[in-house]
Length: 179
Image 1 (tube, helix red, strand yellow):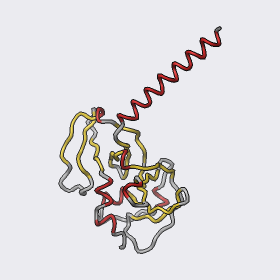
Image 2 (spheres, helix red, strand yellow):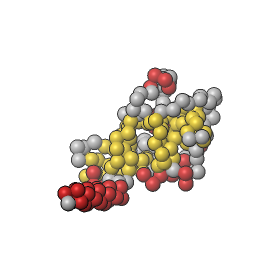
Image 3 (cartoon, helix red, strand yellow):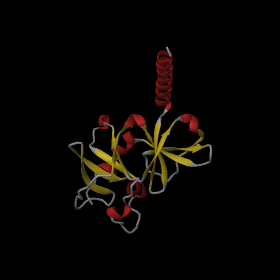
Image 4 (tube, rainbow, N blue to C red):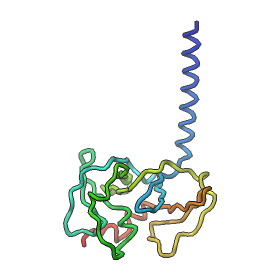
């Protein structure tokens, strides 16, 4: 009899946890990341799979933020250094890729519906965020790229830049990787 009661309690706890997980997944809107010191929010509906850092084959004669190509699950994907892309063509010494890769580095793929086999190299994953985690919305900085749509301020006063991946893949600069 005690075994039946334990099994029933276990099933009830599992059902509650599954319900809570479904609710939490529905409210999460963004993948929070860090790239080059920038706190960014990627829309979950535009993001794809998250991969650990993988061997990247360099591609010559490309812009500094285009790192190369990586074989991920049998498909070739262009690897874009998101920090470098955000920095643009600002004069800076180019740091070798191997010197910047840490155990926290990840590759975030773009959703298949966006039509590009590309991944964004990010420095760290910071979890999921939902609209309730932010207390105010501000206009995007005037000097920000067009794919940064707005700033969101969280309860601790930290500013997060929302990045629209659809706008990013339609950006002429993003599509023109030749140096």
